[in-house]
Image: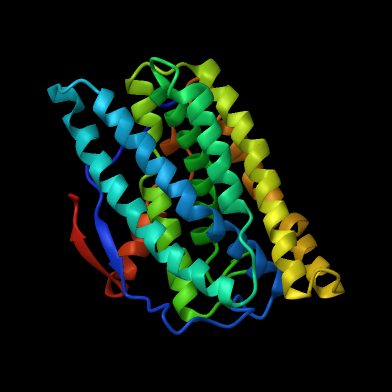
Length: 294
């Protein structure tokens, strides 16, 4: 296995030029009920999830010795927190409009209860509870970065999940995808630097895999139920094509998901090395840098 590429030493915090105050159509993703419901489900998980990721990385950074060799990682943590805070803010606005459309967010509250129980039973009682938080965060970040990479992989081609989306939401999702790919190694690097081991990394990875897969299915189905499109043949046709078609998600995620199980794995070994930066650079007119420090 070749050495992992160098991780970023700084992360830009960006303010996206997208206005969600006027809302958006019910089937904003190309008129496709399933693709819209799936993306909406993911959005519903973000505010709670990203707050947990920020807290985990913050706790881990505090435990990191204040040495010259850790200076770059401590610096990039600040950018990570700033980027995730921006994601949390925009998806909170997004989710507020989904609520107005009659959708009910079960995933967010369920995750909040689950995380609180985890803190009480394990994270706060363990001397190095921050390692468990970081292992969970690294696992979730692996999934979000895979989705991020795939979101940017086939833009305007078959297999582009947001090909027909409303322009503002198309920009929102691709910007979010690019930043998830950009900061995908931060929690992992912290975990490794603080002495996290492979066995616990894998335990939390399989836990996250089961929980994430179950939650996204449950929330997508719930969204379609409230949308009154759950039993339409077109919904199931779209779901089948999205999951198992020629460019289906199942085939596209299998290899990068399995890569995480290697003992010598590093997040930067997965995905296109310049894809996120290429999109951010090519769409610089759609965001404003607010600095790399928070």
